[in-house]
Image (spheres, rainbow, N blue to C red):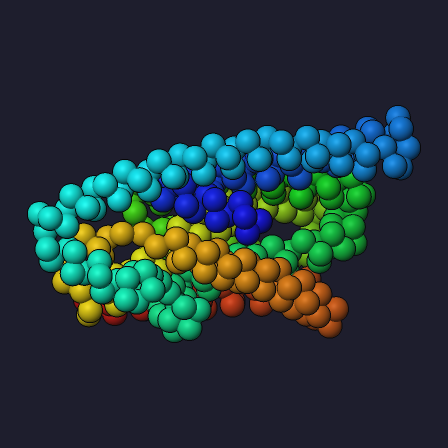
Length: 333
């Protein structure tokens, strides 16, 4: 995951949200097709057959990956030579730019490269990181306890419960690309995360407040509707988080450079070291939500029931939205 997200962040800086949406569609296809293909292979070849086929398929990707890596390195070397030639010509025309480049070399060549501390102490990076944590936490709360809920209160067997989760993945994947595209188009990824969190929190609120003692068929229909809304909210909440964190990192770096350098051309340059740090923190917050969510959801469900667990997730998410919404209002004045 780290390698994939780093490559995506490096190659698609201007439409990262859209590409992240497409990435989630591909991941969703893998999660949807994998169990089906595995079941068919197991039925015809036995337990070991799916693992054998999967390992061969993975090994076949190695020469393809090595070829792509070679071509990219070759292209990067050509671009580096072209940039050096342009910089040498610019040094003659613009001595000020030369001075700034010398100062950057004295700083190890890292023009504003961020540290973990500098990012984790700034709101422009922490706010989207919090949305990422909440989004994966909500998935972590929902997935384990809904399985028990669907069997106990809806009477669904494992196959039908699997269909419900498949429906959630489908909705999440379908709305992922439009969410990323809209965030890229308006260049406001955090706002899309904010509205996605509101929608997801609202769906959890509906799960928590609806009466359990209802007709099972009506409960099933309501669950389908709530899951539909939850999938839309999660797409808006999670897909734009990486570009939002990347944008926050750039804002911090540019602010720091403004205090030391006056050259606007240098301030707008990207730093590859930033991308590696952002993706690493992205993975930490993502996995953190997936760790906290199941523990929190299962604990509350054990002692207080399914509805209390969903209400807790809703209150946490909507509470975070209130705090961030207040911050937006204060800083927009």
